Image 1 (spheres, rainbow, N blue to C red):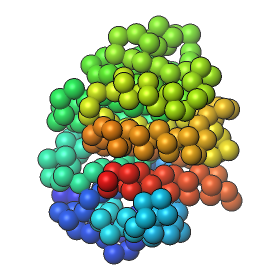
Image 2 (image 1 turned 180 degrees about the vertical axis):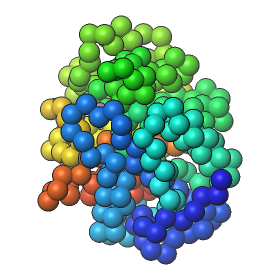
Image 3 (image 1 turned 90 degrees about the vertical axis):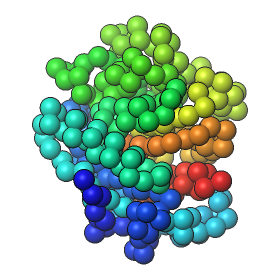
Length: 287
Ligand SMILES: [Mn+2]
């Protein structure tokens, strides 16, 4: 499989060729098991289009991050068939990891896509841990008849790899038994409101090599209102950035997904903020 350049480009029209790019943007507009609000299939394009409104200069990084090279791939073909989608997506990620050293940002799509995104990283990197930023624990073995539900996003990888959860403020009684059990460390939001203390604990729990999965509903809905199943009381913008920066500077972060952006017509806050988040993370990763 060759990775073709998408006609829409993240941040700047002058894209770097894949072999020179420091970052790959991989849109994954998969939407299948949404339980309430729909629209995550439109998330990747909305984020990419919003990125064109960002300043090329990042005021925190102090330089124009786009010059590191962002290669935007064609979106992974949206197949409305779980049995077909997940193995194909996983294979595509494996191929991406073997064809480039560039850091991948996957843009969802619903959170279940992480089930296909993370295993190739777990194969490539020994002792990979996952930082799971989310309002929901997503630890159900299956939900509404599907093991590939957004509510099951982290269950498979949590059977084999360390998963550290932050922002969690919605857990079903049926998934409670998987919380703080085995490989799973869960920092409930209401018990961890002091960000500096939380950061120390998170760094102590993560292994040296980390995959970052960001469900935008981990943020407070005032920051990311456009998402399928919002919950009150999430991370503020600067709190979350402080956490992500600490992880990027102290660990080897090898991949990231930003999922569950469901654009609201007439209010582009969520996709704008998600685009800024990706650009800012790229700055932290350019250290
Ligand atoms: Mn969630």
